[in-house]
Length: 168
Image (cartoon, rainbow, N blue to C red):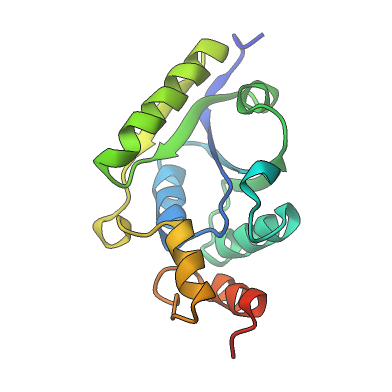
């Protein structure tokens, strides 16, 4: 079932609630390494995302289009990641590591994904230094409290956060 995965295709899964400059940096760098990057936005209703799936997809597509990344596709998914990897024939699962504290959880995910889809490899990328402290949850909290998130996210994402929190 997973023997026909393509290692030129990397799937970057996450909730991207919202897509940050750190995410975009990782996508840009990965787009130079792989023929195709699939930014796979998880529905994740259990996480109660701030933005709905369609809005997260729309925001991510806008950022990707603005950065002219022709080999990057943005799509949503709601099934098990392992199933989606096989369905899209992605040989690589791309994950970002901001800090050592991320490693234990990411290692556990990678091990489980290897168990579920043994042919898929997980590749970890670290963000550029200027983005290493940015997380979507911190960005949401700063925006919720009326702080300026302009240096952490694309302008379209900053505007969406302002609208969501009704900030002038």
